[in-house]
Image 1 (cartoon, helix red, strand yellow):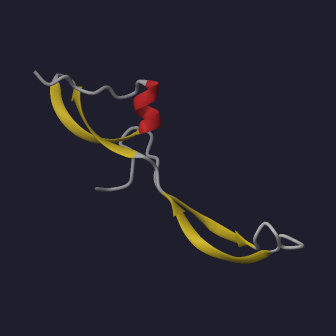
Image 2 (image 1 turned 135 degrees about the vertical axis):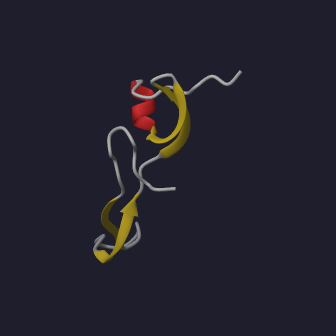
Length: 74
């Protein structure tokens, strides 16, 4: 499944994980930085678009905003 929202086009973004020295260190210096990936919370949802049921990949912020609604299965 692609990590991209079909409504808002939200996709993974890239950043860095910063590891620091422990809490009991005299100074909490940065030990290192490693690359990491922030994935959006993508859900596979059955929706009704123009009267036809369709399966879409939607992020949870679009679901909460009401841009996509789950189809009621009978």
